[in-house]
Image (cartoon, rainbow, N blue to C red; front, side, top):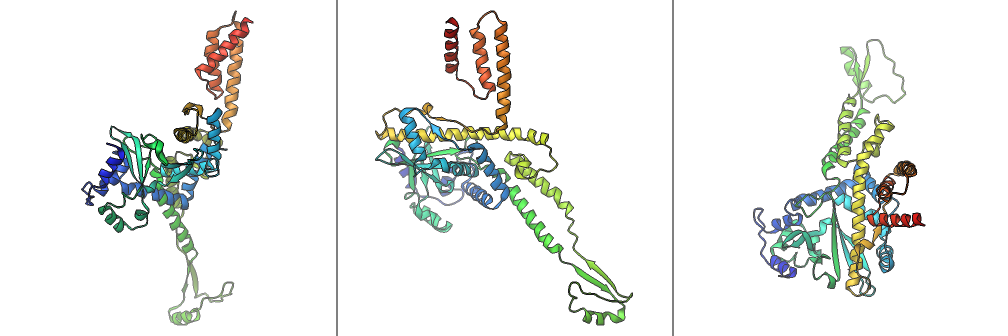
Length: 448
């Protein structure tokens, strides 16, 4: 049975809206997979993460740091021959501007945990135009019958469902009209994708095994961000109240009424008040006990830093850290960011490969698609690493030269072991094929 037929069969079924039934709630749960969040929780996390990114400086800083380190000065895919020319035109096309939009797409991937990109093919030249679809617009992910990890199609909210209230949406589901009029995007893996006007690709991070959707980088710290905001708001209000104070004036019993009438209008600031020894003035102000709050606020900041995987001094909270401690705290964060950068590298390569494959399927590109032909040079996560890598490569090269000089003749085996090590310590690992080419050139040179 074709996927379109299976979809029609599913959509033509009457939806039972009871919570324990398998109607709309079951469809909502199917979006995330067996281990995914329920639809309501998934939508709530997306909204809360987006709102936190807009309003909370900690959330904004966390997402910005991930993008700044992974994208760096920019990422540009390259390739040989026709593939390279197509990739360059696709990447820098005015309708795409992916060199400028990549930071925004990385923000969305980190903030939402998922990135849905629709590729609309131009039938004239085969170029695809990339349009991002918010995670909240995805109604259902359709997978292969025998492989739930193989995504075949995506159903996006219809305009009618998007602009209605929750009660109206339930009525539409009962009439089976909202999903029928929803936009269906095929995955590039679908057999009919070559003839489709547009396809959709899906990338995710923090994705549990058994789930179809990822999790936001802010997901685990959203409660701490809310608590921190509330505590700060309370402290601001209390500090405003601290400026309020009262004067308690003690006078003899017989003069209370007269003094109350005299001071019914408080004296102006700077006024001189003359009184006898029988009149005492005492000022009473609120005691906020502000020092007690600093420990609670620090605990919340530490929870936010731990959940984000970033050291506190990256968020402007230096505390009592010195340079040595700060440097040691950065290593786990940099490792995590390198992992995110490799995932972004895969996203860029896969997106370019899908776009070229679409042009090839339309007969507008001659060379067969080859994913390995598309390369992406990643920017440095930490510029301080370059100096240490260069120093390590220099020392290893010196040791290799001394070892070769102490041997009676040239050893291809030793060279084959040392060359990969030298390039590995330089931060540029070599492929086995390149090592064999260099060794062959060295062998020919020694023979001459």
